[in-house]
Structure formats: structure tokens, C-alpha cells
Length: 534
Image (cartoon, rainbow, N blue to C red):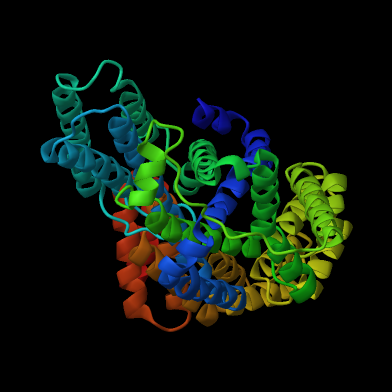
């Protein structure tokens, strides 16, 4: 239901999920830290809690320096997260079977595990279908016949394996022992299998980033906090304090996510949104990695605490005694984090009001190093016809972040609209230098240069655009009208720059693309230009 609603009110639901994260998503990451960095577990899992954690932090620092690393980190995060959700659902299912006294044999265990793995494979195959619409998410770009074939087989395995195992267990499990496992199996179906089936039967897409980081993340976090609170309460026994636990996970969650983007942007001029994505990726990858080693039911202490129904069957305390921090330091840190959270929420909600320049200007004043907000502000000012203030906003954004390609692109668009073609060409050349992979700005620049008679340089950018489309697909590959027009313009630029043979080849290609797409006007134009080129 939330997935369908987000398509109708994207801004409202985006803001809602961002606020819910403060009390659900952020604390559940801190719950892992609370669990993993106790005296016993920290030494038992030093490879993960110390060394690989340091490697992830180093990767996050490197991504702040070189943005080319951001898609790698973000893709790893949104690809691993459904596997993490799958592992939790499967682990909870097995936990409840053991708590209920069900006699789970090796055959049923293998069938259930295969079913859950298959549901993840089904989603993973869907993620790799075609070109990714999101520049931050990398895709193998596999054809639909491969991905749907794999997903179809995986879906059949999920249904057959799960139904077979649960049906077999029904005959020898105590009454009521299968209720909770059925809930977990159904949950996995609704989270992974049903959305893909809906996407096949309708035009509803399956956007990877929203799928991994939206409502599923909230529900997973709620599950997780339920289990971690139970575990901590059982292990600590009479020493347990719910107030202390929730204070730690709430404030600790804020500390994991909020300070770094604000410090990196205001202190070092790093784009705020980019820094927030890097932090989210690193924290999630750390969470997935550490969670996989500290919550295994094969660990006798974990199994004893989670599967025993006797409240007295507690393990030893996980955490060592707290360090004697001065109360004033604790209160000061708490106030600072809560204040930062309020500031962050205010900035985010203001930034969502895309058609309100005053709200966007307020968001920009709170943090002027956010390229997304600056872009929305310029767009809102342009739509209102306030081109002078739009230009001033762009000049300020370029001054603050001289290596921000997006601001250069927008400045070029505005300059072209105002008839300042030299400025437009300069901004777009700068954008190409800063972000060579942004082929859309190459197309802008090529068309501008061609219109000014600079055919040689225009041909260079047309070539780069078409090579990118041919190599990666992308939205343009599904728009034959755009491709045919670009090929035709490329042929014109080649012809004007003294390359008639290559121009003729591209005129012929434009004819083929236009004919296959039923674009008669473009086909006639290409044929007319091909005749003298022969």
C-alpha cells in the first residue's frame, strides 16, 4: 500500500520516511553497535568490528574525495539490503520454529533456505534488467528474457520450497507452532515476490533505491528493534533499563548519520546530499557485515537467549560497565544531537517544496552546500520568470562549489535561455570537464556548437553521446526519435567538418533507425541529405 501511495504523493511520503528514520531506521543501526561492541563480542569478532570497519570508514573518506566511488558504495548498499532483510526473515522463521518445538529436519531446513534465497534472486534479477534509470545505481543491463527467466524459476522455487517444507512440518509440529513462521514466510512473499509479479502484470516499476531504502527499510527496522530489545533485556536481566537502552539507540542513531554530512558540507564544501548518501552506504554496509556475524543462531549464547521460552534462561551480560562519563558531557551531547536532528528535519522538509522559492532559499541558508536544493531553487525561480535571481543563485552555487557539475549545467541552460550563448558554451564545457560521463550535457553542448557553425567540436560530443547510449543503453536507447535525430545531427557535423564517408554511414544509420521507429519525416530528411553525400 505504501509503495502505491508513494507514487501519488512522492514529496509527502519522502518526507514522512525521512522523519520516521529518526525513531526507526537510525536506532536500529545503533542497536547493532550496542550488541556488537560489548566486551565479549568485540574481541570475538575483531576482524569485522575493527579491521573491516576501518576499511569501510576509509572507503567513505575516499568517496568524499572522489565522487566516482559513490555509485559503487551506493549500489553495494541497495543490492545487499534486500539480502539482509531476507536473512532476518529467515532467521526469525527458524527461531520461531525452534521456540515452538517444531521438529525441523535437514530436508525442511534446506527447502526453507532455498525458498528464501530464491526470493532474493528473483528481486536481484529484476534489478539487473536493462539500463538503470538511477545514475547512482549500477546495473548489468541484462535483457528481459534472461532476467524474467531467472526470476520465474526463482519464484517457482520460493513457492514450492516454502509450501513443501511448511506442509511437512504441519504434521509433526505442536498446535500453533507454525503461526509465526507462516507470518514470516508471507512477509517474505509480500516484500519480494508479490511486487515483482505486480510489475510484470502492470506498468508499475520496481525502483531499486526506493525499494531498498523506503517502506521495507522501516518495517525491517521495526522487526530488528523488537528482537534487539528483547535480547538486551533477557541478557542483562535485573540490570536492564528500557529508558537507558532507548536513549542510547535513539541518540546513537542520530550520531551515526547526522554530524558527518553537516561537518563535511559546511566545513569542507562537500555536497550535502552526496555526503549523506556516502554515510548511509557506509553505515548500512557496516550494519550488514556485523549483523551477519553477531546474530547467528549457531552461536549457543544467541540461540539460548532467543529460543528459550524460560525467562530465567538468560545469558551473560553483553556489555561491559559504562565508562564514567561526566553527566554534563552526556547532557550536552544529547542536546546537540537533538538540535542537529531538528535542524536537519527542518532543512529537509523545506527542500521538498520544489515550487516555493522562499522555502528553498530558507533550506539553502541552513546549508548552502546542497546541489539538489540549489538546483530546485533555480528551477523554481526560472518557472516564475525571475531569471536575474536565478542567475545570482547559480553564480553563488558555483562560487561555493566550483567543482559542482550540476550547477554548471544549470548555469548553461539559463545562459542559453537568456541568449548568452558564449556563457552557455563555457559553462557546459566546464561541466563536461568536471563530469565526462554526463552525456546529456554533451548533447546540449553539441547542439549549441553546431548551431554556431563549430562542427568539429560538435561532432566530438555527438560521438561521445552515441557511444555511451550504444554501450550502456539508458533512457535514450528506448527513445528512437531522439537517437535518430542525434545520429542525423552527428552526420551533418561530420559532413560539415570534412568527413563525408563517415557522414554517409551515419545518414544511412539515421534512415534505418527512423524507418524502424516509423518516423517518416526524419527518414525523409535523412534520405534527402544522404543523396548529395553519396
